[in-house]
Length: 256
Ligand SMILES: NC(=O)NCCC[C@H](N)C(=O)O
Image (cartoon, rainbow, N blue to C red; front, side, top):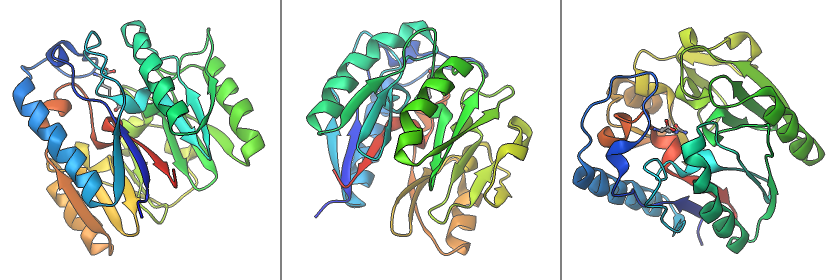
């Protein structure tokens, strides 16, 4: 028995040309990135997920960051309209993959723009970061799609950060791990723990007590263990050079 499907997309040969917005560009070692992607996939498999590949989009340097192309909620896939125009061709392959996984499909339409990295689901609350990539028109569309599924969509204003999940994610018990300087935390409802490592606020609950996080956040891994969870640590240094984190390299479809 698996926990569900984990969609991933192999890194493009053009990965090193990926977008950078809030950090300096540094050289990406694509061969190393490929090895790290293999290890990331292996960690998901080991944690009980059936890893499935979205068809490659080698002409899109950022296509490995598959999370940004879809929001999955309760059997529904909301195909996004990425805020960065060069990333919009990425959505076709994702739509095919989620249809094959048996999900119902709807889309964010213009003038809405939304990146999956701006959407954090905690219980029935769906936080959406409004900032550089995601606008109010898209948030209204997402709300219309998810309200009938018993979700409450809450807007979180962002400052100087790529995505909401660059600044805050949640542990399996709903506790938020955050870098509070990067967002308006007053919108957040669950208990919040500030972390002192940039990569420490990006975690992915993998089921039971398992928590995926990056090797660049060792103090947060210790904190996660102290809180009674089991850290699953992966080195994603080459993706971090492109403002990627553990969340953006997969889309989890529980129960699929
Ligand atoms: N959800 C995410 O954290 N996505 C990371 C996207 C990084 C990519 N270089 C971008 O700027 O779109």
